[in-house]
Length: 216
Image (cartoon, rainbow, N blue to C red; front, side, top):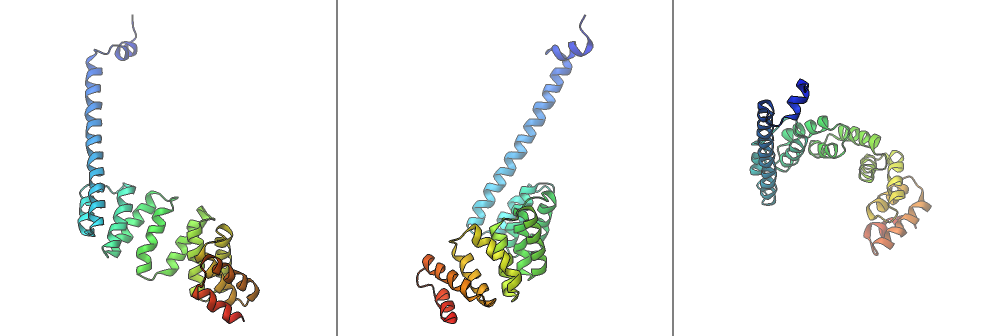
């Protein structure tokens, strides 16, 4: 005689199996339809964004909004930023950060509305958190270096900009900013070499030529 479990599992004609199969197929059907609706909403939002109809793009995603959906919150953070809805953008990006605390992209997104508000101290904190996750992140190292450079804190800017140039030795943006930073630190020899490298990258570059004139 089969055990109860064996007979229940093995007999595909069992009413319990039939009911379970119907329930599962119904659930999967609902899930597939819901996911298709979300994908369609994203597709529509991209088309509307392309035509600069940001409010329409936002509305299409709000129709399928789920508070625990990382991708929707991230996308809404971007669209509300484009629409000039800064508090809303901060809210959506913050939700995305909380949903994926180790992800870098929502933190970079959060910087956008914060920069509109001029909250550079908060931006600095976000960049430092990113570097704890990814110390070699070139974009963040460059931006931190630029923040400190604009504050006139050339000593603090230097290691971040050096890291950028070490990782990308022939990148124009990194070279020119590090060259000017070195000049402000009165490290003229290093600055001259960097300005000359800039001219190799971009001959007749006005900024590099101006820097070289100051050294002479």
